[in-house]
Amino acid sequence: MRIIDDPLSALFNVGRYFLLTKDSFYYTRFTEKEHYLKKPFEAPQNMHYSNFLKKINHYVVCIIFIALLPLIISCFPKPTVTPPPPKPVKIALVLGAGASKGFAHIGVLKILELNKIPIHMIIGTSVGSFVGSLYAYGYDAYQLQTMSFSLQREDIVDLTIPDNGFVKGEKLESYVNWALKNTTIEKLRIPFHAVATNIQTGEEVIFGTGNTGTAVRASCSIPGIFRPVQIGDNTYVDGGVVSPLAVDAARRYGADVVIAVDISSTLDSSPPKSTIETILQAVNIMYGRMTLIQIGRADVVIKPSVGHIGSADFSKRHEAILEGEKAAMEALPKIDLIMANFKREGRVP
Image (cartoon, rainbow, N blue to C red; front, top):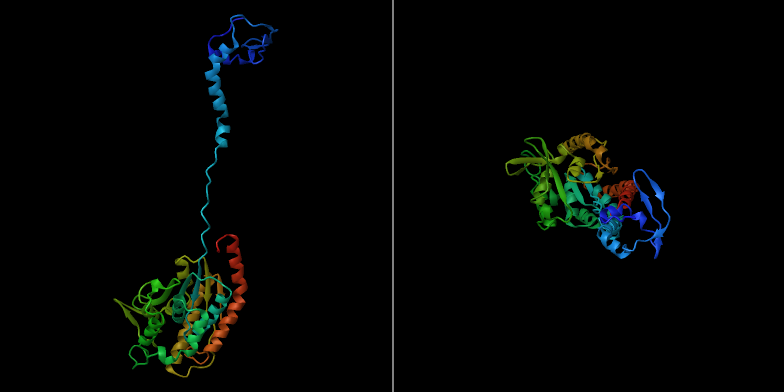
């Protein structure tokens, strides 16, 4: 029998040799026309198994290596791809306009704070900006309650001869800056935005930087009651004219959850007894109508029952706070459900 000297060709007849024994072997030979098994025979004298292996060793090693390459690669440690952590949920508290009814905001804050509901952003309009700025600075809800009980009308209201308004607003601005130790908006502990209206263009303006007292004053400048506030080349009045409950602003600033506190949904049925009360009642009616535009886009709406409290009535502040607590307690199950869903997603620490 003739042995093929070419090692590459020999690979195609490897079946002939894999049964080699010390003295003899079987071999199977494949050709295009025949397939047969020959009887055992004596290996030729000039055939040496070791020589044959030397001839095909290089090719066999290459083939084995290529065949085993996937297995070898699979044994290497695979790089660990760590998915990015879930984006933390951002909760915005939107405090609406409503003059003296705004004491209810403090009651809401007490319940949210007691139940450890995180607040990552505060958007305030009119009295909502007043309460919101103090909370954003770092006063807790109970400190705000104490401050509200000691607050006198004369601390924030500076009546003047009617000239585009009965109240100058300078005392309000000074009180806020005093309470906040002149901290600017961008340096408050919680991100805070005050909503005002550009009286020249009718546009909603959001103050997120600058003098906090000035921004709150602009946001609270109810037309006909407060004099408009001049900032630069623009003149501003109460943000409630265009956005008494600024849910959309909270969304624009990235809020995933919006908790909105509406204190304008109910009206005092008693007739107003003065020019200021008449203006405030008319403004409150406007607030109620304008609030309907955005309120449906809030995730949670808290509505303290403060319709019996006049917009200029400071004597019922304690009742307003209690109504805020009651309304917040009623909304708490829905807030807890939302928080539970975000916890399951790993978005709440």
